Length: 148
Image (cartoon, rainbow, N blue to C red; front, side, top):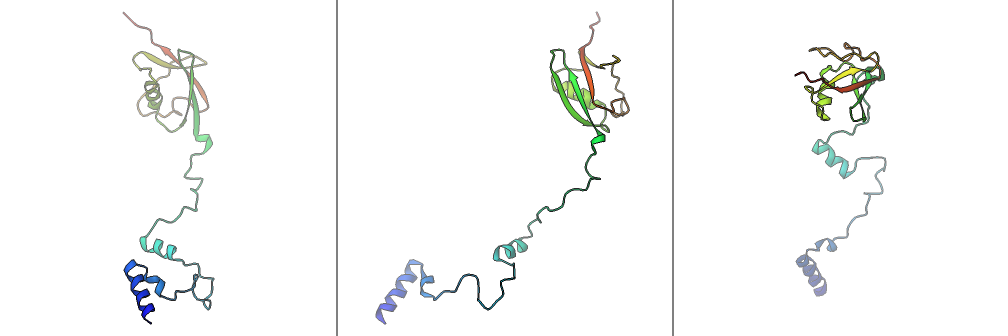
């Protein structure tokens, strides 16, 4: 009996009081059915209001259709050809923004169609479809002629 008391005191002092209990079998009682899928982790997730996992994909109506997208290739004066995809509904200003972004300022360079060669005019509020870019297109980036 004295030995048992010393052992209890030792476990309590070292923080291992769990060794004094008889414990329980992992997985719960054998009498309960194992069909319940509620685990402590799932219960904690419910109490924390975590977002539900994404199991649905966006409907095709929300995704742009392939016929709404056009690929524009930009032939630079250096000989490089850069390609980018745009929605046909984008404003035509995106072409000039792209051109400026890659290092060709609109005051020094202009865009023109490849065949028939004509300058690409951009007016406010027009979409790519409105200015005639409805299929995959190659645009020529050329230097503007300097007037003295």
